[in-house]
Each structure stands twice: as C-alpha cells, then as structure tokens.
Amino acid sequence: MTKKDNQKDEAMQQLMKDPRFKLLTAVIKKNQNQSDTLIQILHQAQNLFGYLPMPVIKYIAEALSLPPSQVYGVVTFYNFFSLKQKGEHTCLVCTGTACYVKGAEKILAAIHEKYGIKPDETTQDNKFGLQIARCLGACGLAPVAVVDNEVVSKVRVEDFMPILEKKIGGKP
Amino acid sequence: MKPPFPIEIDGKVIQVTEGQTVLEVCQANGIDIPVMCHFEGLPDVGACRLCLVELKGVPKLLPACTLRVAPNQVINTQTEKIKKYRKMIVEALFCERDHVCAICVANGNCELQDLAKKVGVDHMRFPDILQPLELDASHPYFVIDHNRCIMCTRCVRVCAEVEGAHNFDIKNRSYKVRIISDFNQPWGESKTCTSCGKCVAVCPVGALWSKSSYQGKIEKKKEAICDLIRKRKVNV
Image (tube, rainbow over all chains, first blue to last red; front, side):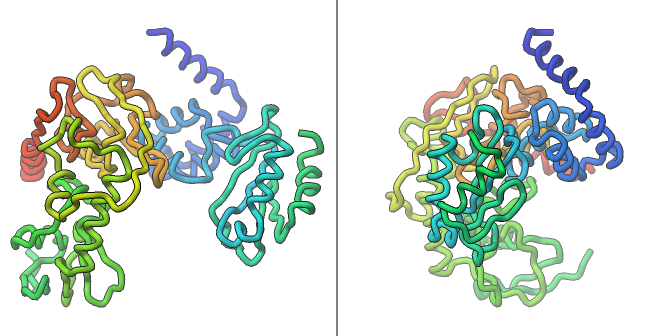
C-alpha cells in the first residue's frame, strides 16, 4: 500500500469513529442499499454532517454499489448538497431579477464589508457562511434573504444588518 | 411485430413502427439531420440539440434523437428556423471553449469541424468565453483536454454502458460543467478505468486522444465500437 492509500484509510477510520456515521449506516440499511435511493441518502448525510465530506461520499458510493463518478456528479449537480462546510449560521441571499432591482447587491456588499466573505464562502472561524440563490420564487417579497432557515423579506440594508448580527451573535 | 403506421416527414409519407425515434427514421430514409451527441448504439440523451426538428402542433423544437414516433405526426426537418438554430448551436459550441483547429490532434478528423463546414459557420458572431482549463495527462496512455470538450457525454455513456466501468461522469452544471474521473481525481489515479480506450474512439473532437497520436494524425475507431455494440445486441 502506498502512503496515499494509508492516508485515505485514516480518513475512513476517523469517519467510522464518528457517532453520526452510525446514523448514516442505519439510513443506508433502512433503504436496503438500493442504488436508486442515492438522493435520499445524500440528503440525510447532508443533514447529519452539515455538508458532505469526501469519506462520506466514498462510503455511500461503496455501500450503494454505485460508480464514484456518478455519486460525485449528483452531489455537484444539486445546489442543496455541499462539499464544503457551510458554517454554523447561514445566510442565503436571493439575487434573482426582482431582488437584484430591489437592492440584493447592496446587501451582499454590506455583508462583504462587515464579514469579509463573498458568496459561497465562510468566515475563518466557520461561524457564518454566505450563499446566493438565483431565485427563491418569492419575488413579491423582494429583496429576500434566508437567515438560518428563516425568511427575511422586503428588507433594506440598514434594517437587515442588525437582524443578521442578532442571529449570528454579534462580532464576526 | 407491431403494425406499421404512417407519419409525414418533410412532406413525405413514411411507414414507421412504434418505438423508433424520429432520427432513426430520418437516417433510414436518407433525410440528413446533423448530430453531435448521438452515437449509433449508445443511449440518446438529447444533449447537443443539433438534431432539433419541428413537430406540428408543438410550439418548441424537439430533438429528433429522443423524439419517439407516434401516429399522425407531421415533422419538418429543414425549415429556415431550424437551419438558423443549428448554425447558432455550432457557433455556441465553438465559442464556449478553446477550439483552434490548427493545433488540434483531431484536425481533419473532427466531427465539429465537419459540422461547421456543413452548416456554413465561417466566423463567430459571439465573443469567446476562453476560460483556460486544465489538461489531464496523468493516464499512462490517454489524455483528456477539457478545453476541447463539447460535453456530448459520449465518453461517459460508452464507459458506463458498453465497457461497464463508469469511470467518467459529469460534475456541476451550466458553463462550469466538466467531465470527471471517479471522485474528480486525475485520470491516472482512477480505480475504475480499465484503459480500454473506448472513450477515445467515440470522442467526436480532439478532447480525448491517445498519447501515440500527434497533431492532425488522430485515429478514431468509431466503426469498431458501433460493430461491438451491434454484435452484442444480436447475441443478447
């Protein structure tokens, strides 16, 4: 075995010690290792871990007897799945046409100014992650943002930043 | 045997049977439809949109390769609108990535080049996106150059369906879309690749080539793959 393989095994062993890993195996077992339940299983894994670490993806591919490239393709295709850690608190800003016109860009600029992160990035302490969406389908509420799964609608920048700070807990 | 029924293509009445695609019918009757992602024997995905046809009663254009024949269909394949669209699609394929024929291994043996000649693309109306992408030469025999890839996914399908290895797949979407090997690894580190070279044989452009070929001297054994698929189907 090469050095690289050893390292990979270490990552796998670490994963097996993780208590969340047991829950994941239970989910896979419940779905009887059926390959067509891939998306449900990825969904559960994402909820368990907050994102999809590489060892988890490898384990799922192995357990469902699916080609590695196909699983990776599914993970990168859907916006919901993430290969990177999303951060303890998340903020999703809609940048669809209506929200853009109503000043979504200003919100993003304000966040960048305060926390120093751009879309799809997280702060260094992994406390806060920023995402953007093309359209949430709620243009009547423009501009829309989703902070920790809670919709904040028709906000102006001045009003939005205090809401965000309150959720995240003050300092960046 | 299901009973044949007539459909109308370009004003001609043609007898077809259920289950056939419009593209199959057209090819069998000498009606010329340009294709790119279609490869004889591989499952069709309708990715390139070059085989678009007009179906009477449907406002949008439909890809002939995935359109099944049905009774009372009236289809047009050579209208001005379709010709305009085809030309535009070829131009879009050219400007999406780096297609410079003069330095390409597939020069003179390239389906994209032939198609451009056929639909009359002599210059580009759109600006090039030109995003320099990586070239993966980690495999001992083959090279994949993402700059020349047109995302027809023939290699993905031949690897999954014919070889059965499923080394390739696609990641992301839109302009970020790429062919990947295993877990987005270098091709040479892939555990599933059997180095059979079927992907190289079916690639319509110069995105996949073997290390023994050089500029303009690529050999693609497309007929061999077609033959293989046909013989297997007969034996099954």
